[in-house]
Image 1: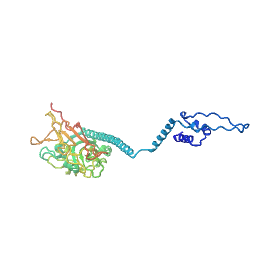
Image 2: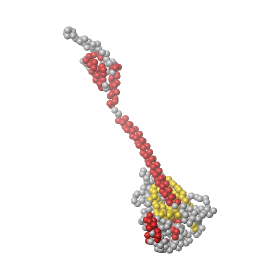
Image 3: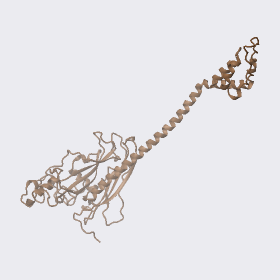
Image 4: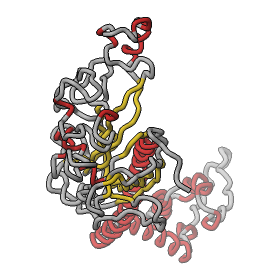
Length: 435
């Protein structure tokens, strides 16, 4: 029974004119043991035989009044009930709200920091993985390269048509590869590529007429015996983003000038590098400085079937995004200046040609150091800096940046560098090294 029930019980007990004998038997079981009242003596009921016998008066109600300790207990319970019904004061509520807000804010801040830290680590890990994949891909192609240009021959060295010179391979490819400050060419090289499947089938269908003079038009000028031809590959750094599809500061693109495209059509501007002045060094000029891209007849007497300049309507594929911006360029005025120009590895050996940076300047986030890929003009007349045709060595550097990834602003700078060294396996005009 609740406190209210006890109060009602003792109100009945203490009310004037209460008849205890009528109420007492029903209330005793409801009282706590400490409040049980003594049972009154049983009174004899009147007998019909003695109707004149008067009934005794009930005991005085004072016999059933609670003792002072009982009243104190009841009053204390009543006061406790009143205090519980009062609730909190306004000051108590304000203090509780402020303390709860501080604790909740601290917990929320800690959760947000943990989530942001986790996202930063995921961005860094993903960017590192992509940079490593790109570095491995470029390294694989460089290992298969026949000739790799160093930084001087990338842009041009010497006087064309006057002895040994490098006319600059970038001067004879689409200009979009070298449009400062948005694009920076990094490394260019020649590699061997297989013929498209359509030409391989054409060679098989005309196998008996390969040596005919002239051969069938379907295989005219096609190297059916080797089923391979040389392709010029240029990797360059691009910071432009006209379509808004890219999120990083810079990205690596790959351009290729092959003799044939995938459907077997000839690409204009392609010239066999073995027919040019000093082979690959002087491409695409002959010994007199003539551009073979515009000549109808080649030095070996064959007809140039790809007269013209390389097509400028190309969209080289992107190898990877989130490369750090090169020095002096950027995206939407959010450029992050690179570090100072990084040099190439020092080599104590004087018997090997030195490393030459490619490009010589303009990029610190992606560059290569090439050994034996140009000419040496220190003595006046230019001479090839790779006598004997040794295998070339290339050191490739790349710096990634997570700027632009989800949760990372373009103005942020969380960079890391990767490096690899490659030794080419090309075998064109290789000679035993001097002992």
